[in-house]
Image 1 (cartoon, rainbow, N blue to C red):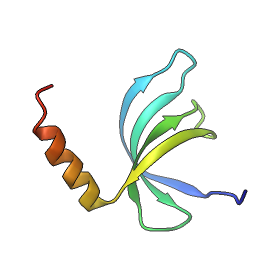
Image 2: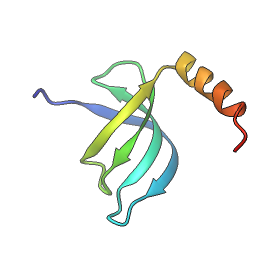
Image 3: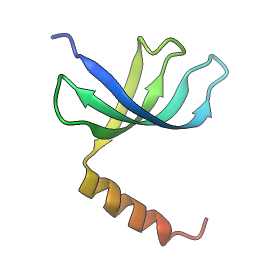
Image 4: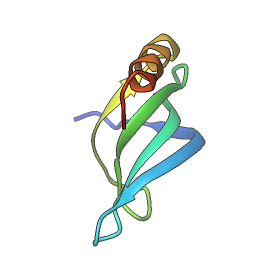
Length: 73
């Protein structure tokens, strides 16, 4: 598997933390030098390992926000 390069451009929020210290985070990340996208995934405490996640473009994030605004939480 090819190396994946990433740069956390902006840390937005930690949503939760596991007993082993992994955190579920929302960040703005540039993957392999591309334009940054919003990214939601689990990260190890030292940010060297990551779980599977979801990346969202700005329009995707706007649609998600609108959908969340309509939920009664």
